[in-house]
Image 1 (tube, rainbow, N blue to C red):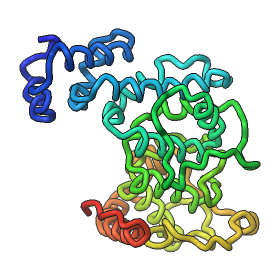
Image 2 (spheres, rainbow, N blue to C red; image 1 turned 45 degrees about the horizontal axis):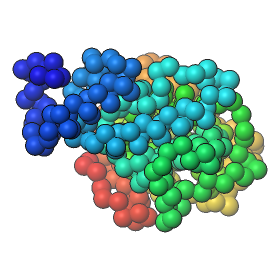
Image 3 (cartoon, helix red, strand yellow; image 1 turned 90 degrees about the vertical axis):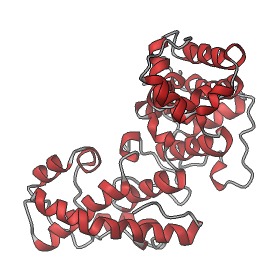
Length: 331
């Protein structure tokens, strides 16, 4: 048993990826395992843990894995000059392998790279991706002629600073396993609509405070229900929440993904600033902590989330379907 696995692990491994039975140990499985060990600095326990989470790793060719390792290494390489990077250890490739191993099964050209570009634009680190592309560290063909999100030009709004893209991704690499159109972009737009961040129509901004784990927070099961219940508390004066603002809106349906581009949000916020729950509380705390901080009844919120949550999700997904044709998730 080259993987030193136990009897409890093998049934899960084979049921999740039965195709490995058709692979050669010497020509396929062992070289793949050795490469994964190399990424994890020769730590076989880390590799076994990653394989247990995502057995499909064993079915990937060494060329496939190496292509993605080189891509992630190139992000590290172009962040080494940034003051907050300090030669990140473990490497981004290792953090992704151990924390989000399923990312290695995704297409680099059609899936991983567009997500990296989207996040780099959001955080104001697109210059690091531009530098990576110019140096051509990876030989993969990353150009997506029909993808509007592959514009890597640096405009006057992009800020050249010391924020490390590798560190921002490495904090919560599971964000790369999320759907770009179904999760990442709608969640970023939610934060933009609610005033936590500011981005332009191309998704560009300088918002490193919107950490990857906040983007990975469930939009339909956490963010939308909490935000809209927070607004309901304003209207009905429930609990000891922040002072009401007439500019507060209930989000969901067309409000989430569509808004009037002619609105001057900056001027509105100056004349009528909107009080918001702390970002870490809205996206990271459990329901009990969220309600306790705002002094609202947990039971009332749970009833609200159960009754209204599916409606918010349906409305948002309906608008997404009209725009992109993306099928509905289970509600």
